[in-house]
Image (cartoon, rainbow, N blue to C red):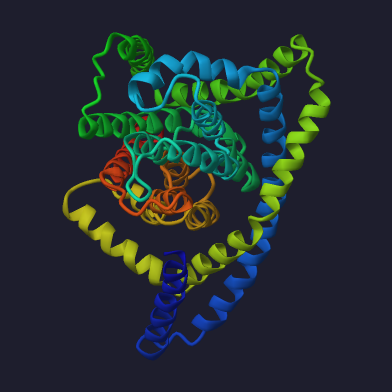
Length: 409
């Protein structure tokens, strides 16, 4: 899948460049493409330096939370809910703890760190699966919730914005929170419909209703605020939540007699190992996207979509953010490259860049997650997993566009 996508970027770029040279007489197009390759290779290293620090930092704090028993407490707190949503998973099964830890890593926006934990959780669920090749209901729900992007604190998005010079990297905190709520809710409801889960069960309602009421009241409050006030609130809450979470992990860890420094270093080493493997993928995708942009092919495709949007009488500013949305279901590294390229081309705080950042934070690499998670345990029949995951993906994209018009439009 990724081989075809990556090769396709270069083939489309080559065809576009030949057309501009032979038909348009633009002989300098090839020089621009070569220059773009080297520029994107340099940018990859610059982004990677900050990514090293981000993953190392947050996996260090996550290890403190794990040793302090916070993850175990979350698993116990969510146990009754999982018992209803995944009735085939016995109470106290190791899969519940791994699922909780995976959701915690995803919630912190640590996509790459969450994947190894998610694979362990999927293998634990496979031990309960009566079929060796057909996905169980629990595996499908776990995968769809992963594909819905359970991002509560998108630190990697903040990192990309900071790297590109954003004066306030956390500006997109609230938009991402609201958009990812849309994708997760749609993912849960679609799986519940297909599996006939009893969401009206008193225990399930006891978890869902308070969350829905809080979210509804919060959105009602946001509706009374101006766009400037919304942006300011998003910044304050983003930074306050980020630092508050760090202090929460440290204080609870200290109270539980955890050697917080040693635990942090232990987790940070794991973060370093995760991060160092990402550079080849980042270079590959950023260079491919850079060539695609320099060849004019990307602009040509976006212009076609822009004309259709204009014909429908809609605002077209979101169109430049669509490349991120288009490739996100297939490749996280390609979407990351598209996001960085959009920020670099349009400006880090431009409307397209803000929409692209929100889409990146509220959607997931559906086909990649499907291939990796199910492939790791030999699942061949995904049943309704693909349809539900893509529905959640679409909800995340539409939610991101709508929320950004509300906040920044």
